[in-house]
Image (cartoon, rainbow, N blue to C red; front, side, top):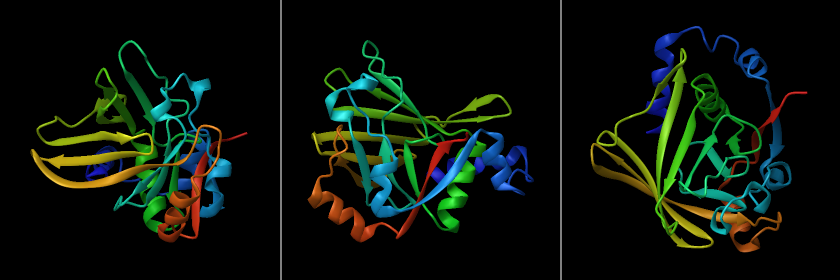
Length: 210
């Protein structure tokens, strides 16, 4: 579903990916290739410093995600305690890891071109989150209506959320969002070992260009 949404960005420019490295640089970022087993030493875990609730702190593994991205952090996401909202720039630095292969590169280039942002809205007790994907194309914000596409997550415990997707009101898949690194950068060794069994040998993360 993410790929479907991001493909909308191609409508405005078929030449946008003629030189993807130039696109990355033009946006002020650089790609850092790393072994997947070092991703947690490069990414920034969400913590108290970000004002995040404890259950959103650390780094999470998208276990069962069919797309070529693996880890997510809520660091730098501007948590709003009163409204129970936050937003993550999927294409930005320190918050996402991607498979270092053509599929991962293509998905990231689409996310970057469309400036893909995930906007999260939580219920009062932080057990449910609604996720709205937003593209910015030609200065216009684009997001799908919920009857067409709906993303959400259900809290299970401090180490696990269930990530749900629905298309035209019908469930199309659920995967596990597992906390693999805590807010202090410490690995959950059991979950980390499971992650390494499924992760590609090489990943990449995004850094702010110097």
